Length: 265
Ligand SMILES: Nc1ncnc2c1ncn2[C@@H]1O[C@H](COP(=O)(O)OP(=O)(O)O)[C@@H](O)[C@H]1O
Ligand SMILES: [Mg+2]
Image (cartoon, rainbow, N blue to C red; front, side, top):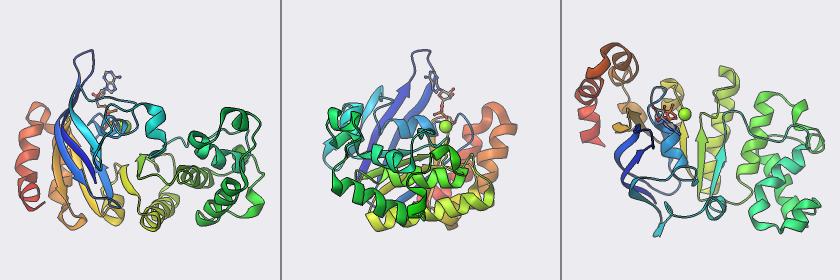
């Protein structure tokens, strides 16, 4: 179980990116985070990998308080899949996947690219799981398509058997047909490995298709928490178009539109 308890993030310039969010995500759940640009999605996710610290409140993974742990400690249990893949383009597919295990490999072994046999076998297994073939192993990542690169990113993310996977707009750089395949893969991998996923998206149709649960944030607040069926067009309208059109009345409009779903959830 992942728990955000009364979490707030205020940046030094005064921006309140997250305002008092409490959220519990059971182990193994695929939770989609929806919301317009600037809503606070990335900040919420970054509190789990140590790249952002709450200014108030706490984040727990099981019984462990993780909001005060270092980035190095968190790398062992929280993996990230990025919008721009964040791979090393000139390196081989195999080394990119193996780099996901760096937190458990000594510095000198890593420097010499000497990964133990069991890690190399695991990298091959994961590449097979994400739909790449042995012929991809020694190819440079820069030679692969965007969809294939994201498959490498997903294989890398599972090298440490993470309890939590963060996917921050993982398909924003891909075309719609490829996006579905990547989300299907993420969903299947997280189910098979019992990994909790927080996946930010901005397409409601993809959220409905792949989320076990959908939450929406706007202006740093949790404004919706429900099942894909409960994410009605009215809620989406309020979240996106209402927010854009109503200016300062956004929060009130969203609360009104979302209250039934918050009550159900
Ligand atoms: N380092 C920062 N310093 C100040 N404000 C920031 C910083 N990072 C993000 N913000 C602001 O916090 C809010 C939420 O940003 P973010 O979490 O990136 O939103 P999203 O991922 O939903 O687009 C935005 O208003 C953004 O401008
Ligand atoms: Mg973002």
